[in-house]
Length: 328
View: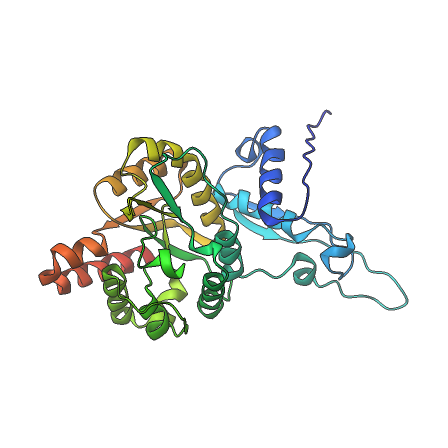
C-alpha cells in the first residue's frame, strides 16, 4: 500500500506560520475534504507522552494540534482530541492532556487571531488600512475584553458587520464598541477619547434589552466580514465600495473568515448586519464556501440610527426576533 506524505518547513512555532505550513502540507496531499467528509466527527490524536511544556519537544506541539483543529472546523467537522498516553517511572505519572495541548479558550483564540493579522498586498494606492491591533494599548483593551467575556470554550453565533470604522472598532479593536461602550457597558477602563459612535449606541441598547453584556456575549460574537478597516481621503471606506479594492481583498477576506470560524463559530446560523452590497457579497461567499447553513440579514445599525431613528423600537424588536431565531 502506498501512502502520500508531505513535508513543509516551518521556521518557528508562531501560530500564524504553523497554520500556514499545516494548511500547505494538507493541501499537498489533496486537501482535507479529499480524505475527510465535511461535517463529520473527527478524532485528532496528538502524541502525548509526558506532562511537559511544549519547549521540551516531547509531545506534539499544541500549535500544530490547534492548526489541524482549525482546518477541520473550516469544513464543519466536530473535532475531538484524545490519546492513550504512556506512563513510566517508579510512580505512575498522570499525563495532563490539557497542559500538554496548551489550554485554549475562545478568547485566547480570538486574541491570537486579531494580533496576528497579516498585511494586505495589492490594495489601491488611495486606500489606507486601519489595524488597531498593531497598537500595544489596544491589544491590552482587547485582551481584557476577551478575557472577561470569552474565557470559555463555547461555540457562539457569529454576528458580522462590514469592517471596522474610525470611531468604533477602528479605535477600540472591539466590533461595534466605541470607547464609551467599552468602559461603561463592558467595564473595560480605557484612556481613549470618549466619543460615541452611532452604530455602537444602537448595538449596546439592543444588548441591554437582550439582558446585558454577560448574557449576550455568552451566546454571540460580534465581528466583521473584513477584520481590518479602510479609509480613503480620511473617511471610512467599505471593503466592497470599489471593485478593485474587493478583488485585492477577497483572498484575505476568505482566509480570515475561515480563521474566524475556527475560533468557535456555530455553523448552523449566522447574522449579517448590512443589507445591499454587503448582503450580496457575503451571500456569494457563503454559497461558494459553505460557511453557514442559514443567514439572517438585518439593516445595519448606522443606517437605522441615521435614517430610521423614529422607528428605533421597531428595529430593536426586529433584531430581537432574528437573534432569537439564530440562537434556537
